[in-house]
Amino acid sequence: MTRDAFNLSDFLPYRLAVLSERISKRISRVYGEKYDLSLPEWRVIVHLSRCHRVSVREIHNCVNLEKPRVSRAVSRLEAAGLVVKEAGATDHRLVEISLTPTGWEVLDGIVPEAQAVEARLLGSLSDEEQAVLIALMERLHDELDRDPKAARRSRMDRDGAST
Amino acid sequence: MTRDAFNLSDFLPYRLAVLSERISKRISRVYGEKYDLSLPEWRVIVHLSRCHRVSVREIHNCVNLEKPRVSRAVSRLEAAGLVVKEAGATDHRLVEISLTPTGWEVLDGIVPEAQAVEARLLGSLSDEEQAVLIALMERLHDELDRDPKAARRSRMDRDGAST
DNA sequence: GGAATATCGTTTCAGTCGCAACGATTGTCA
DNA sequence: TGACAATCGTTGCGACTGAAACGATATTCC
Image (cartoon, chains in turn blue, brown, green, orange):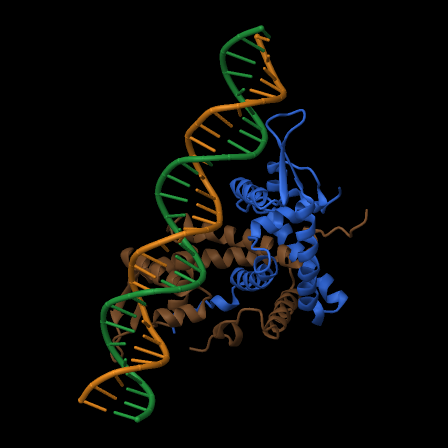
């Protein structure tokens, strides 16, 4: 009666977290149940399908995963035969990671279904509504960019891929 | 050249996850730096400020946290003196959890700042744009509700609080 | 050239998480 | 009433995570 009640369900950060987690869980079934991949592994192989021979750090900078997480994901993918690690040609500190034929096959087995889930999710939204949603999310990112206390945004998410 | 490139940065589940995580991290500074609370602990005390004497399971059903996570969060909050656990009056299996005066004080120290961060985030969006964003997110939830493979949504997030 | 610095990927370590199993209590039904 | 089933909150266990430290390699600067 005295204080204004603070409603978690109306709190945007909470709302976003709940929606995002729900969608993430749904998508994780696509790459998890059939191929037993984790979210970091999924992001890594997707990134590799665009940027074919990249280092751990590049992946880290592009797909919003901490460096150790990328390193471990790559190791597991290598053990599963989806990925190969080669010493950097000129710079021996770097590791050049690329998909194996098996890795490509797995990706081909996952991507269509992942896109189908996304398409179904967006099915009730018109093209314009989808654009509005993306645009509003970008506005929130812009606001975070102006906040010195917010984490920086990865380059690829900001500018889009271009390889 | 042969396959259509699949761009992670354009994949809605990924976009949502990145935005949500970035915002969550920003908010976690509000309750983490000054009061050393974790995300589950934050959600629990916020929920308790609305529903004053509730069980672990009720919290679990309302704030999208697994049961063990709620249990552990409550234990830590109790150790910190922000919360008390009392045996259920009629049903001795239940635990009635409520905020202590200290818990209320901590909440009063956090909520305004959390709301300020949210307000700044939404600052560049008009009232109508905010409503559109929420509405579009609800549409995505509706679509997930129709997907039998998606996790169910918690009652309170669906219907809104009403205590 | 050679010492100091920077960067790369990995690993260590402590903390957290989710699933499943558990003991305890309550509800059900013959 | 008494055995069985259901529900409560907790905990054991294996897996995952992020920050920091690490060895190895490159670069910089004198």
